[in-house]
Length: 395
Image (cartoon, rainbow, N blue to C red):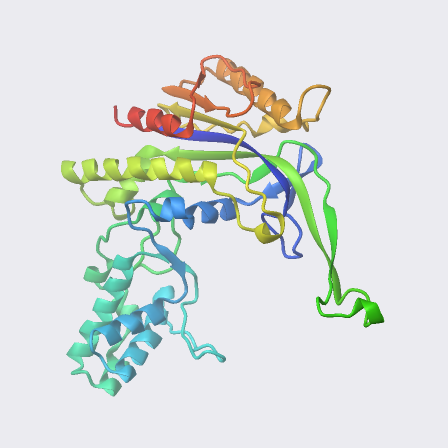
């Protein structure tokens, strides 16, 4: 089963996702420049949002600070500072297959792994347990521990490489690592870069800062203390998400990444968790906005249209080509309404031409009546939309 989200969201002047120069990200699509928000930015904003993080399931953390986390846990278990430091130093080797440890940061003296990894609490506990076991076998002797802690060897230890529960965000968005201790996980969710439905040109905000205490009556240093500019744009974005429900469950049970046999109880538990995950994800995808330059622009706008299609076959279909010809405002029709109409027309044509089967097709259009597409049912609010989708799962 495949759940696809198509979202149109119009943002006021903003700089939600910046490139290396601090400018809003862009892309050429249909031969013209478009505003763009990267899929990485969209996924992180959802994964780290309160709506998603406060849900009733465990989430992972993306970090290079595994050694420091291990050090803290070793200290909590009563090991000495010296042994904890040795354990932390060696733990940096879990970021590579060869177990080679990393050098401490010259400024902070902290040790980090070579790569940023998505780690669960169970992952950190497993590494800590493995290191603690070596410390105990070495009689808590620092010199012997430093000699005996062979990370390359530990990474082949069956107990350390055995199944550990996979968090919801890892099951959804996947994980790629270079250590056998942390299994690669194929993402159940595909997320497109959001692009504007129309042509976009960047604009600049020229700003100044003035000293509040300067004395204007005496012409004391009149003028600005600093000047600058920030680039921004305003765009109506098309966002697309595709979720393979079967893949999500297989990741949660460990059937996919670990190749393990799964009991009926484990499968049922994974299905319950996946329902909660999808509820939280749909709500967060509608309500969460990237944080880039929000203190400057406060571009907190909700979607103008959410279209959800549930398909029995895992054949994802993006409707981005509805906007290959840039949408333009025209007499009596706003840019947003014109985008909504184009999306509806395109979706209907593709569904008819390619005989696209759907178990459920719903849309939420809070302020307009521009969406028209045969076979799609309108719902009144986000909670009803989410309920209808989750009721279809495993029915």
